[in-house]
Length: 395
Image (cartoon, rainbow, N blue to C red; front, side, top):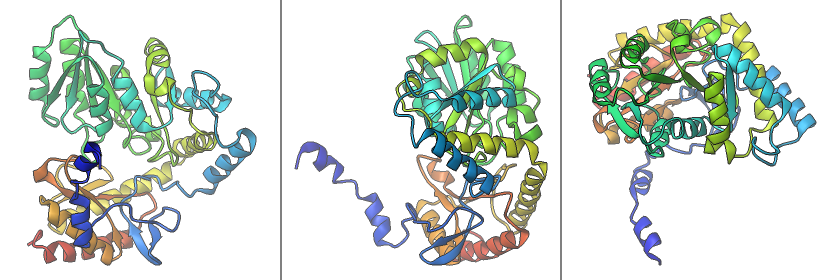
């Protein structure tokens, strides 16, 4: 055994939880994802999906993906930079730019690679990147790849953000990067105050709209639109794997920023381009989201109902104001245990432990879809109360 294998062989934390029967990852699903899925031959209520608009099995989107595959094949066999640009890639970019209110956009193969490739190359060694300490891991990895000075501020603490801005050279570029909707906690970035500080300190703002698109704002344009601050936000990114029922991601900004990224963003230049099926699926999903206000109304009706039910049942759910509802456990072992108990009751939820959160903030994450029913919410609340009480999390 080499030194590398010897070192890695000592990592046995997953095996510990597997032996205890509470390992919660890589659970196999035998059906399409909707509010109910098949797992191990039984029906389970799905409260762990990011498909907020409930479109992943929409026949219109499936047909669009099939037709694109028939026309273009299964892949592009190269990067966008060289032989991998299709006319539907360009169409999607134009539609996304118009949708989120920017000059131009670039489509990437994954949402993670957007943040990794954009955050890492927008600034240089004389500049600053300033991040909320609960930003998504893709933002964290993007800033780690940058040569810029990297600063963090306590989650949604505007005094802490201003303190970091004061530390910066006033003549240097200062890029503030935040999630629009924080994916674990479900709360929103304090974008109005961030914009005020941007203007005070001559900074720039990038907002990750992964969990905001389809959900917030007019036609689901996101948190920037919800606050009426699209023009004040310099860079907007989003993903296709949540409301847009596909996979991939994009960044939108002014022409000069997109021109720079098109020729310098390594995860764009050196990655194979988005598949035809995924591209066509995202285009069709975008059309549906823009036109179907009733679906978004359903999502918010069920979200508000669920928020009230969980609060009234005594769960600690923090400051969420979105279809992401954290149920705080504040103990790693109990987080895994309650996930297993919930599954035994027919409820699929996701555990959140470090590094996705602080050790004292472990939780299980309930995520809602426009297609959930009040009866499904009632069942989940009733049985999760039982699970939490069994572990003395709820008194």
